[in-house]
Image (cartoon, rainbow, N blue to C red; front, side):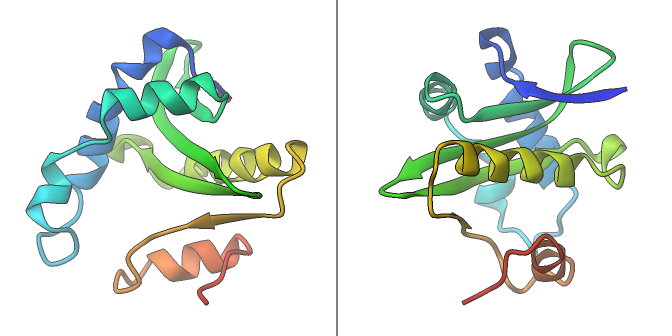
Length: 136
């Protein structure tokens, strides 16, 4: 069973590996090498954790298989990163994480959720558009 929860401190050190494992699934044409080999710095993960904006997808009660990190900028919530380990992709975990991020924005009475992503990936824009997030 997968559960989406606020990350605990002990999860933070595990998240860069999830990011790198997810990135390894992209070709070099889709994701440059420097993005495939560098994860979000721990200090950034710790900062969003302190703000209550670091979510993890937990499998079997304690094993993180995905995460989403966001930050508040002015009156909106910006999604910094969302990743799911390859073996758990396609199970709706990314959607559940994104839904919780969007709920976090609503709870905090923020005006919208934003993100930066690659538009050249064939699955990327359609996935976000299906979730109600469109390109401008």
